[in-house]
Image (cartoon, rainbow over all chains, first blue to last red; front, top):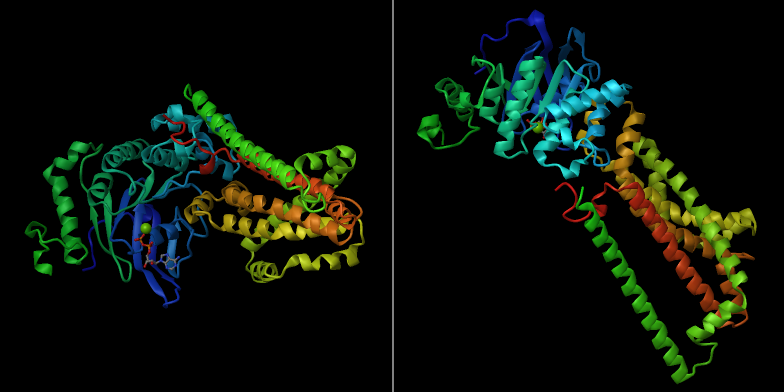
Length: 279
Length: 270
Ligand SMILES: Nc1ncnc2c1ncn2[C@@H]1O[C@H](COP(=O)(O)OP(=O)(O)O)[C@@H](O)[C@H]1O
Ligand SMILES: [Mg+2]
């Protein structure tokens, strides 16, 4: 089952290099193997999605990469430096936008700069420009509770991008949004990536979203959390929503769905997904 | 923006409406009380009439004012000290397992002891001046401050802290910019309870040993069986307590305009 397709090339250029990572949480019912034998290289400027059922350790893996959780074993190297705590040049977006209610949208975006002691008109100008770019130009002085979920998540992305990080880590950032807002933000993220070529690790449980955005999709399974397959997405860029109606796109989605069906994660009786024989 | 004015007006209207209802209710009580005393003529020692109480106040307004100010001063001093000490302790408790196991556990255990019973001890230690009264007010107010501040400091979304840590924020910045503002609504809930407890503490202190304050005035009036004077003191005490509570609430409104409870329903953003 452990088919790692031919996408492990370019180890030398890897921006994020994860080797043999294991993470075990202690719990009252004994140790929980959240991650086991994780090997993954993410090249500079690459968009990688991590896809898997809930509880397979996606968030844990992202927190390990972010230096927020120590690993139990194995090594993570970012930009040539072994990881010790949160690295420089990293931005993060979570499923909940965690905007601070007592700050305006502009001040919420500015907080990442404040934390590293950067202030002044240039930073503010950059924050304003980011907000404008994400369609929040008129909302700088509003408070988070005055905005819709999609607008709030846009502000959270602006906050992550403010200090122009090289690495962007996103944990199901659009998981709580409705389908239309989600499409909208997928496009926006694809566009931002096209312009800036940041290295992105994007967690999702949306198959189509993963295929649409990524250069590679990493598929995980649980108990213990592990990588089962990595596939390259060779679809032309820049990508537009119409891409999702093409047969190539459909083939990638079907491939991923088949894999999860064969793992017993997707249980559906539609013979076309090939999981009918799995009951 | 343009709709903020009528909304503000409707909010002010609602507040005035509420105050009006309360005033009306109190006026009703006073009228019924006055009428009852006029009809049944109880001894003034048992129940004086509202007009009798008012006359009593007019006999020595300066005296009552002085007593009220002393109690106010004691209460505020105890309250402010409780806030400073309480917030400090809460931050310590949240950041240190050791302090949580010692200070917090001890505080919770001590809270079930009727702390008022310790008042005479404070007099023995600190004499009969204002200090033991402030100390008792502080002691009574402290618990609510600490409990609600700890609750507030702990109830932060872990991803909020993760975000800050991922941005390489110092733990002082995390406290200052995230944990503390996030805890403020809970802190204020505690402060509103604490201010009342501080007043109780001040009065108890004056009961135990004192030569000034509303508690002392009540005690001396009782010694002379001067019931109207007791009532004047009680009413002043009620006014003082209510005023202090609303000052804390006004402060909350001023400092937390962003909090859910302060937002106008159907609020801005349209
Ligand atoms: N702080 C923690 N303490 C103990 N167990 C945890 C903790 N965080 C996650 N886990 C466990 O680790 C496993 C993976 O969790 P997570 O990384 O959140 O998965 P995912 O994001 O894929 O849903 C789950 O079984 C979860 O219960
Ligand atoms: Mg998760």
